Amino acid sequence: MKDLGHGADINSLARFYNKDPREIIDFSSNINPNIIKDLEKHVYEGFKLCKSYPDIDYQNLRNNLSDYLDVDSKYIIPGNGATEIIYLLMKSIGKRLAVLNPTFSEYGRSAYLNGLDVLDLYLDKDQGFRVDINQIVENLDRFDSLFICNPNNPSGNVQDILKLMDLLHKNNKLLIVDETFMEFVGDEQDYSLLKYVENNKNLFIIKAATKFFGLPGLRLGYGITSNKEILERIYKFKEPWTINTIADHLSNYIFSDKGYIQQSKIGGRLEREFLLERLKGIENLEVYDSDTNFILIELINKKSYQVKVEMFKDHSILIRDASNFKGLDDSYIRIAVKSREDNLRIIKSLERVVG
Image 1: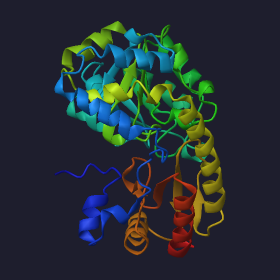
Image 2: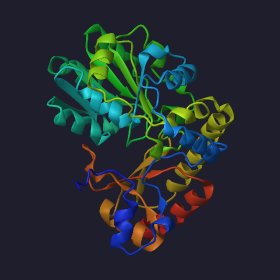
Image 3: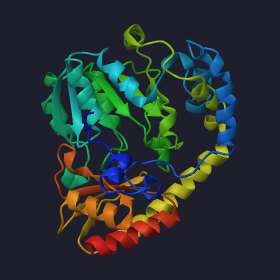
């Protein structure tokens, strides 16, 4: 099995170091630690529906997403996680794709596997991993589509990309925005581009239930665009019934649970601020500000793999070695924002390992 270089590799590490995977605290995956009310009940109800095929058009799911996103359901295409949407999209766009790094590796991997020419561009690290519009302008003739993650993974920063959207729209280039982590942003309405979808056919947004709703195993993602040609091409390649009845059924509850959504936003912001403040007090760490539920850290006196091993072996904590992100090196790690109890534990552990 090929190592794709993502986080959440608990089981393989636990086997190697002879640990019980149930005792490991996973800070490598950026998942909301809160769980929606009556999750087990809703899953069981969905499980009972598994004796029938899901609706091949997923109209109920798309209607629920429409209400949640305030976007017409005809612009929404659901998938088996955001990853399915990414891979289908790579089959359905022009052959030249630009990717703003450092970022999620599956953008580039899916493009390469589908025969696209990938142009690696880079966010300005000295400016907090911001978009360099001048760099985009200089390379406009070298790509048909541009992929950006906002808030960006692994740097955690959200940014106003309206100028980027307008620039690409005027030049008839497709802007693909992964907003998987957008719900964690306190003032997400100021940054999300959802409100521009209907009137901008050069915009494609990707979102998922994975991170904010804390359900990575559900495998529920969705793309949003008003570009009929792209939607038609995606449906041409898309396999039927890739979303199970449990995910379809859960959509009746998770996207309308306003209490859970509000609690997760407020609690996540408070824990992020707490963790950032405490991490910045640890010697030998350069901590980057974050707008979402994970934090990028630069190590001053140790290598990322060394810290990952020590944290796992000696403290039963799994962190993300961020050295394989394009544009970063072996001095970078990434950690998730979790519960207060878990956050206190990683603070103490990092103090012992690097402080």
